[in-house]
Structure formats: structure tokens, C-alpha cells
Amino acid sequence: MKKNFEEREKAILEKYSVFSSKTLGRKYKEEEHFMRSPFQRDRDRIIHSTAFRRLEYKTQVFIYHEGDYYRNRLTHTLEVQQIARTIARELKVNEDLVEAIALAHDLGHTPFGHKGEFVLNEIMKSHGFPGFEHNRQGLRIVDYLEERYPDFPGLNLTYEVREGIIKHITSYDIPLLGNEFEEFVKFKSSTIEAQIVNLADEIAYTCHDLDDGIKSEIINYKDLEEIELWSEIEKISEIHKKPEKHKRHIMIRNLINYLVVDLIEETKKNLSRINPQSVEDVRNSETIVKNSEKVKKQHIELKNFLEEKMYTHPKVIRMTEKGGRIIRKLFYAYYNEPRQLPYHIQKRIEKESKEIVICDYIAGMTDRFALSEYQKLFDPTSF
Image 1: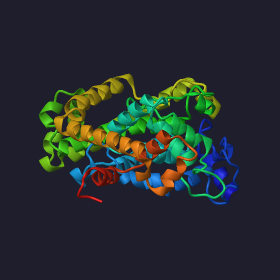
Image 2 (image 1 turned 90 degrees about the vertical axis):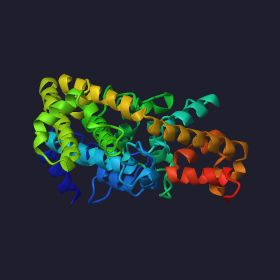
Image 3 (image 1 turned 180 degrees about the vertical axis):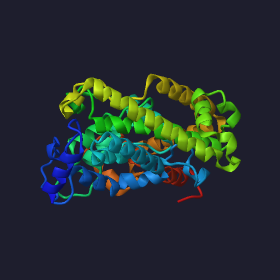
């Protein structure tokens, strides 16, 4: 059955794809499954991990208790997966690898969004460590922190998925590859599958943060009329002919489609120009998966608009600053008295530095759990 699967890949996938039969392998030797490819197994291991389940209660923009409607890290991850698979299928590259990377790309995020990451980074640097960055933490989770197998630490994922996690790059995610990540700096570029996830992430969070911003009434349609990309989508959608209650959904749907279609068309042009004959050619080439220059500029203008009107809105800033203070206070409460930590976390301090153990513990918290811990530690009426 495995042989049949590999033959189907050869028949369907382009020659510059990552074929499951040619994976660069796992850190710890395992016998592969007779029915599932290595990348399908990686996908399944990620879905069943503790870190993946916790994404449901981690902030995207709005902290979870502000409303069930708004996106969280889990819904965002699923939306990235859906967009990335659409692109991968059209480009005829490995959908299973794309899916696994997409599902894992945000595993290392802290509670309270990027503010939580910023605060932990500051704290760790002040204690003489390189800092904190969620791509690194994501790799640490799948390589070490998940405890599900007796024969090895972590999830023992393939090199290609691990590379997609540590080298995930967007305008908000800049990989920090130090000496400890030497295995990932030998290639100029990531696989085309990892590149697809990078752009799918950008498309997903821009469009869906915009959707949440309109729903919350932080963003209004009048302000958006000044944005070139929004105006173009309005013309395409003929939105003036549609019922008002459907306007937002139609616009967001068409915005995603516009960005994805342009990405596919531009990437096909790049593939034709570069003409890679193997995954090695992709790795030694410039970035292939891109939007056109026109659409890239339009997208940047929209992202700048979100930064000005939404991410720095007083309501959002109030909550993110509150989240940052909670993380800082939790860290130093545990640091000054580690016996407040659960026993299984305390035991790790016997083998690892106290700072790293506490950082791992806090980074793994959901917003909900962090708020509960804060209340138990600092509210004299809670226990």
C-alpha cells in the first residue's frame, strides 16, 4: 500500500515537490507506517498533541473571553491550512507536507498573542539567555516538550516539517537561527511547500483580522474606502448590488480569493522562469512563492491600515498590555518561589535552568489558564 501511495505521488506531483519517499528523515529512526506517508503521520501527531489543542484558547487579536465569534490561534491555524492546501493542490506539490507545516506553524505562540512573546523575550534576555521567539519554541515543543512516546522525546517529526516550523517567515515572524539550529542553515531557501505556508499565513491573518475588526466595529467601511485593495475588491464584488448584511462576508471571501489567485499566477510565472528540476533546485533558488508586485504593495497598504486602526486601537492595546503584565508577574512569582509550580514542572528544574523551565511553562499556557493562575497567585480570596 505504501508503494502504491508513492507511485501516486510520482504521477501527480511536480518534480520540484518534496516526495515522501525522499524525506530527509527523522532524528530518531522509526519504521514508517504501511498505509500513511511520513508527512501524513506528522500531520496526525501534530493534531493529537497537547500544544495543538491549547491553540483554541490562545489569542489571535481578541482575548478569548471577548466573544466566541472572534478568531483564536486554532481557528487561524485551520484557516491557514485550508488556504495553503488550495495553493498546493493548484501548484501540484505535496499537500500532506503543506498541511503538516500549516498545522504546526503557531504551536510555539504564548498566551496573549505577540505581546506575550515580546514580554517573555525581554525577560529571558534580561536573564542572559538569547530571548524567546515562537518559531524556536514551536520547534522545542515538537522536538522535546511533547511527551507521548517511550522511545524518544517530542513528536520526532520529519526534517521538512521541522524546517517549516523554525524557518517560518512573514512580516511578523522573523526566524532567529543561532548555532543550535545549524542543521537548518545549510539551504538558501525552504521547500516550496514551506514557502506556501508562509504566504498562506499572511493572507489568512490579514483577511481574518480585518473580518474581526469590522465585526467588532473597531474598523468601519468608510475608512476602508481609502485602501486601494479594498476599493478594487468592492468593484469586483459589485458590492453596491448586495444586501448589507452579506457585505462583510462577500468582501472577505473575495479578498482571500484575489490574493490567492494572484499568488498562484505569480508563482507559476516564477516557476516557469526559474525552471527548477528538483527540490534541491528550489532550496538553492530565490523565494519562488510570491504575490505580484502590484498586489504585494496593495497588501502592505492594507496591513499598515490594520496596524494603525486595529492593532493599536485603545481597546486592543488595553488588553494586550494587561496580558503582558500578567505574564511578567507570573514569571517572577514562579521565579522567586518555584515551589508554587506543579510538581512535574518543579522536577524539570533539577535538570534544566529555572528560567527556561518557567518560560516553557508560561509559553504553553492558554489565555484562560494564565488568567486563572494569576487570580490564584494574586487574589487573596482565590485558592
